[in-house]
Image 1 (cartoon, rainbow, N blue to C red):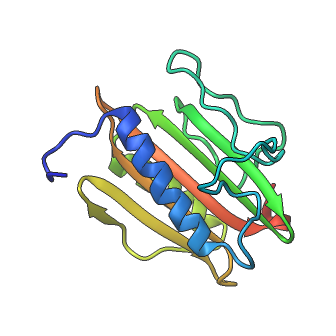
Image 2 (cartoon, rainbow, N blue to C red):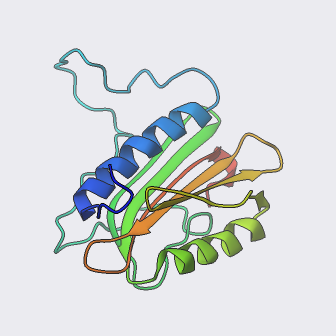
Length: 171
């Protein structure tokens, strides 16, 4: 992909989900979730902790009951595209994709302030192919939040946030 290429909203969301999925898997403590999709077809029904379905562009996804907005707040004017919340053992994995009218630098500043206020440290953000990425790590070392932000087609930002935290941190 050229550095000057513009990512479409769906292309960016797909890229973000792939990146987020790989990051959450790499950051997740303990054994892999056996309910993760495999390459072989299965007739089993999806687990109850499966990610929520994607909403149409005209009808943003709503936050599920019990979504930890204190841990992962949504910005004013943010429209959720997908969201998920799952707990396995001592850890919860929370994620969402969204769009917002704010610029990527403003999104990064909003979340950096909120996550550092909760005890997460963060090295400087990096930007690759127009996608700003920042990893936040809580001092105990086993709780992480990943933030990816890029310019959205038509203006504003496309945002992906994923967290792996102790179940007790989900508020």
